Length: 180
Length: 180
Image (cartoon, rainbow over all chains, first blue to last red; front, side, top):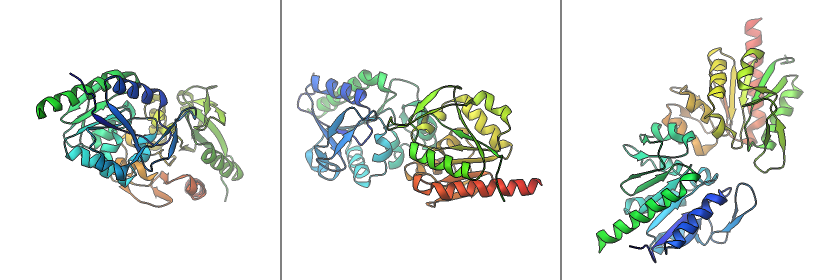
């Protein structure tokens, strides 16, 4: 089994968590996936929250719809706080969710799902500070490394990044087999 | 009218917003208030999110109960995300709220009120990213510089800091007159 050639959109904004992002990126790349950094504007540069690392956006949210992505992952730092206010970002995430693509979020990433209003009756995890926000949005919160509910995959915290990444890979493989 | 000698607890954690904090501190000090930095441990040092400024905690949350504070203010940066998970912080904020002291929060500060579960039926403002979280917690959100509901005073964003600070001062004066 492999996810070679599957296309994954890594959604970022400023003040991202470089360590978490690098581990996620390495894990997906080692599994053979193509990854792209998707953000507000192509060419835009983001710094991590410690101001030591930098990434450049390859594809804007508007353009991303036409790239045939198989999965999106919202990672952390303080990115989700900005992404949840960006209408183009919300539109892209919602399209992927509605198309039953793999939609992942780790740490504070699930804040974006609150803003989309898609959490009623869903099982999720996240950084514990926002557990109450997820519950108020209608979700059931689990203090576990990874929670899978349909095509929604949530991870708890940076230390759980490997388990989260493996769940994303498993789900992509499962969907490939189902389509084969 | 004056708030000379009134004691105000400025609640902070790591990655605070130095510009917002300095403006708030200056505004209160110019009005004659005593301010103290209240955090998890006395002597603890916090850096602002740009890692350029530093403050030291004067009074811990546990000790703060006995200092006779007249008001508390939760300011921003990424502090509220940490403060809302600190039981000693939540206990201090709740005690001040229940004792009808002035309880203020600006920017993301109102996240702490969500974690306290005190927002049902309340009118509030905040940084717009968490408007949906405040509404899911039972509050009504207003896109205004400052919203006052009983002893709960919320400010929208750093640019509204003067209006927010003036509302805190007005409310302290009002309570002084009521008590006189």
